[in-house]
Image 1: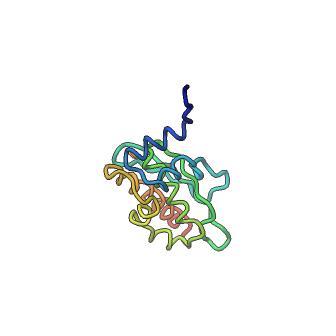
Image 2: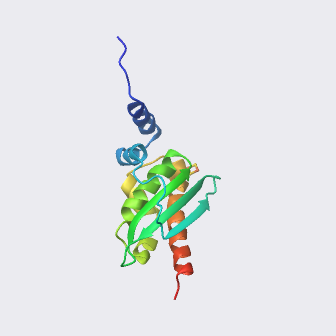
Image 3: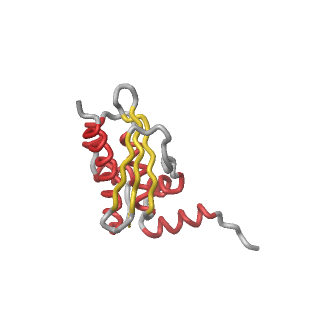
Length: 141
Ligand code: FES
């Protein structure tokens, strides 16, 4: 008898074998914040040292706190899981608080990803910081 393994079970196993912890795998599989926001206040784009790219859409609320973020990503599983974790950490924060988030905060939220993927966390965080800085520069009074 053949037991069917779903795509996500197979993906989970592959990622776990590669060194991704459970929270990182969930962020990657769910991809809750992938895509774009029609009414974003800021759209920014960054190319990582590996050549992969991220585009970020940031939406602020009336108090200038981060209401929502979406990422469009051409990159690896590490990049996707890191970006999804970064959104969860940044939501509800002021721009300054979100600028204070760093790679270590995202790594903690992921629990673990392979060491050779740590630069992908950097790309997710740098893209968010760049988006915030570009928003601030364009809206400085
Ligand atoms: Fe390029 Fe992960 S983002 S290898």
